[in-house]
Length: 219
Image (tube, rainbow, N blue to C red; front, side, top):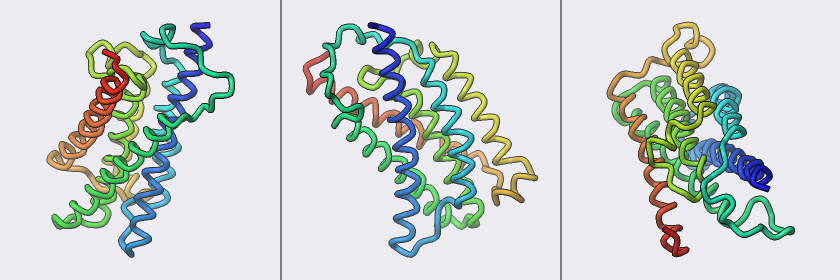
């Protein structure tokens, strides 16, 4: 029974991980099209994110261990939908936050005088960094993720993050990648801004978990 619940939870986590990422990408492009603005990410850059980082990180969720409160939860109704109202809320929230992060840093970079290629490179890296921080948050849908044990207790997640980080560094700094993806190197200041946006996403989601637990009367 415990293993069955774990498999079901991990399947939900993978869905809740992938849907808001795609939603954030779609919203960023939709906002640009509706308001006649420059696209923050090109189609080929979106293909890179979906085929490399998103898939690698989502696969790590299949190896997640059983959550602490798994066997304390009552059985779910047999007719319960996999995507509940709670998960729809989480998907919508994360999609909006990701779109805001991607579009925000893109417009900020252009306002600071960055070239279009530089601004798009910042936007792509922001999306990937937000995915990484979101991975650590979505590993525990309702319980806190902000602890050293929870951050390092999954070998699969750490391996996936390491692989994605290396590939993203190649994407950003390898000269031959400029020809395929129109990328430019990211300087230290903008790199720090990108990481801070990822931390901000993680913090917002942890606060949302805290609010939901208090609302439900759970510690």
